Amino acid sequence: MLRWFIADLRTGRQVLDIKVMSSSTWSRALNEPERLTAILDMQDPATIALNPRQTMTPGRTVLAVAAGDTILGAGPIWSHLYDRDRKTLTVAALGLWSYFDHRFLLPVAAAAVNPGTFILPDPSAAGKTMVNTALGTYLSNLEYGTIAKRWVQQAQAWTGGAVPVVFEADRAGVHERNHDGVDFKNIGTLLSQMAQLEDGPDIRFKPRFTGDRLGVEWLLQTGTDASRLLADDAGHAWTIGMPGVPTSRFQVKVDGERLASLAWATAGRTVDSVLVSRSTDTTLLDLGFPMLEALDASHSTVAVQTTLDGYARQATAAGRAPYETWEFTTEAARQPFLGAYWEGDWCDITIPPYDPAKGVGDPYLVEGVKRSRRRILSIAGNAEGLTVDLTTMEQIGG
Picture 1 (cartoon, one colour):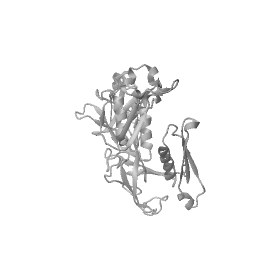
Picture 2 (cartoon, rainbow, N blue to C red):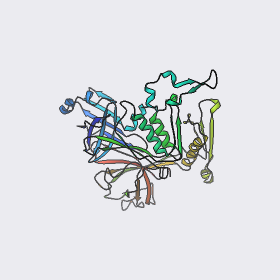
Picture 3 (cartoon, rainbow, N blue to C red):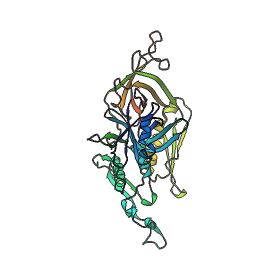
Picture 4 (cartoon, rainbow, N blue to C red):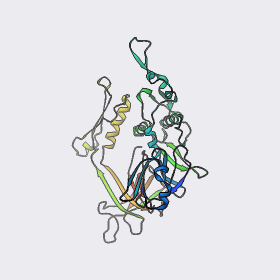
């Protein structure tokens, strides 16, 4: 089985192993926090002695799972579900990214000022007001990844906010992000929005053991402007549809919901500030598809037209073909081994031509696939750690 343990969120220390039931699960996905669910047997004397109601307090304690020296997932516990009839306690945690869903983009000065000073009288216009720029966060001439870093570092500066995050070096660039304090921007949301930009970087809080192996820390990794994907090209490869291979439970999911030749995007919170963008791509029309449209109205706070244009272009780029994922299960103890690959990494999938007489190939992909270059979207497993479920896609972004 994998190793499951808890630790203190503020320090990453006080590591304590726990015993979980085999139905416990963990998963990782691209540009999202990990998800961990530990199910504890409340009839087990060691678990009762642990006193999980106190030692696994939501919001204060980290739940983690590791394979050898590699931590597969670690983050704050956010909920308990105790079932007296079943004698189980279900403990749910999310990766460290989720901690920043509970933090706002404010300088330390905001902790001491009069809350009424977030908005000040405008000295240049009687009866008018202006935002207090001393409570804003204004960053320029940086790569996107370094802007994300600065947001997290500012949150770290608050009393009690210095959770154990390790940072990359700063990278100069051409981007800027300006946010007034009175807008109370959520840092977790800002990070997600940055990763969703047309030219935005992948973002990952990668958990790892400290050098003395007595604690947990997270490395904030971000893609660069020159190479925005967090993607290892280490030659991970799997074969599907052959006797003796470690893969099974192969599924292909094809979803045409996002097909579009014309995409609209809107933003703005008031009629006076509404932005509209349009993007056209004739790929589907040239193939004989009827006109299909899409609307993205999820970016209400966007104030820059070029940013909104990027979202519209993303919609038509994604809409050129159905969204197709390949999912399969592989044995954790066969190459490539669990811990050698992460979400975002590239891999090669091979499927032989379909030959029912020989018992090879797949009837849905009759001609087979010599080498499909794909990116790992997500990785998931259970407490036993014998198998791993992977979801892959042929291409994401550039």
